[in-house]
Structure formats: structure tokens, C-alpha cells
Image (cartoon, rainbow, N blue to C red):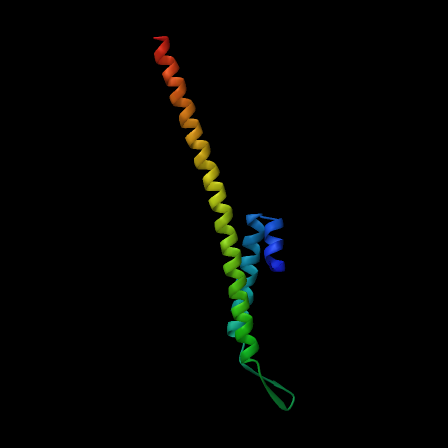
Length: 102
């Protein structure tokens, strides 16, 4: 498990995850617009490999954060569905009790 995954598991706050997604998207955009070559005094430096690996790594982090948000959303949805089903059962039980009283 990577350091990023451990951090996400510790604080499954959707707001924190959404902030990280925004930061990583911004970082990816900065790298996409950065030129592959930069001149350092008299030497031309080719950054294309570093740029490509950075963009790929940020893509992996974004996928991981997206999966974490999906997991959190699925847990919350299951809890809401269970609560609704239990409430429906209680209502039906109460309706049956009313019918018996008549």
C-alpha cells in the first residue's frame, strides 16, 4: 500500500480527497503545458521523459483518489438503502398492527 493510499484510508474525508484531486489536476495541466526542452545557460535540457513519467504518476494518483471517492459513495449509498429498507419494514409492520386492531 502506498503512502497516498494509507493517507486516504486514514482520513476518508471527501472534501480532502476532492481538494487533492483539484491540486493534482492543476499539477498535471502545468506539466502538459511545460515545454519538453529548456535551455540552461549553454545546454539544452530535454525533460520529455521526466514530464511523461510525472504526468503518468499524477494520472495514477487521480485514479486512486477517484476509486476512493467511489468506495466512500458506495458505502454511503448502501447505508441509505439499508435504512430505507428497514424503515419500509417498520412501516409495513405498523400497518399490519393497525389492521389487527380494526
